[in-house]
Amino acid sequence: MAKPFSELRNKMSPESRARADQLHRKLRDEMLLSEIRKAQGLTQQQVAKTLGIEQASISKIERQTDLYISTLRRFIEACGGKLRIEVDFPQGSVSIKQF
Image (cartoon, rainbow, N blue to C red; front, top):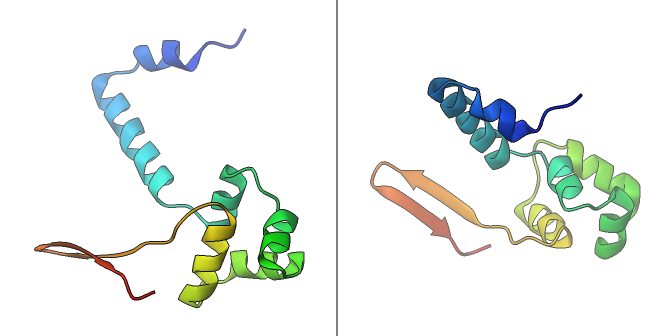
């Protein structure tokens, strides 16, 4: 019989829990566009319809590693989000507002 995750987690050592938490944060903070879309419960077809383009174009966008910021912004907005661009410097972080 399957055990609840909370029961398994409670049996983990504090070090194991810390490693699991760190991995969870990393995976949560770094997602592919396709993962963002799926996490929002959307299909490629639904995003394509919102953007007024073909589903094949969504597939292409999700595979690209080099996108225009405007394309990325439109994709994120079609998924219900808002794109923010932030730069990290040793002195602190700065959000870029011009896009």
